[in-house]
Length: 224
Image 1 (tube, rainbow, N blue to C red):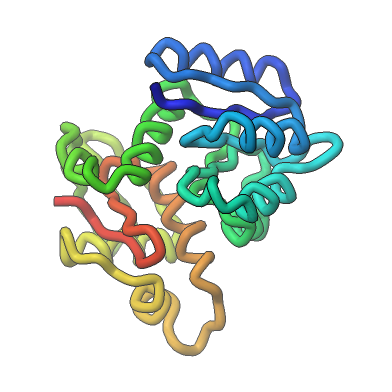
Image 2 (image 1 turned 45 degrees about the vertical axis):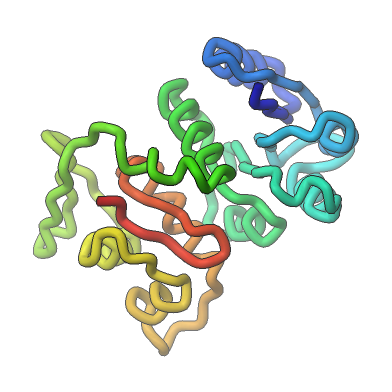
């Protein structure tokens, strides 16, 4: 059974996440601060850890850094779930070693979908499954910087739009972070590869995770 560690100092958030995951058959562990999270991770070897950022005793960023120093937890996926949605906070989270970053509040179905996508990343044999879910087609209107998903119109910021356009231009091709930075940001702007991760995270929030694949340590692709 897949084991997931949930870490948050708000009881209602823990109850919401725990209820959603247990209904899907996951084994759930709970911690209320970073210290408890590190101790439980060492003891229970979870496949996935969901961390809040603002917590007493040890915050989520420090907990993530500590867990990433534990050799036998190298394959554990870590994602933040936080009300902090600033780009610089997300960059800090990714720099600390996170694999994903989700924004509170999050709807149960969206939360569960992101969890399943994260677990597929952990098991390479399940990558094929990323392309199978039914999904509305995307239409890109470059003049209006507007995305239409089925009957739904989605407004994106300029960099998000350009990133999506790049990925869609060659479905299935893996674009490295370096390629994306060069083609979307250009040579004249100095940003880190983690900026790409933040913008991909925002695309998944707005468009849907079923459209994108992640090649860990390399880059991203638009799924056929």
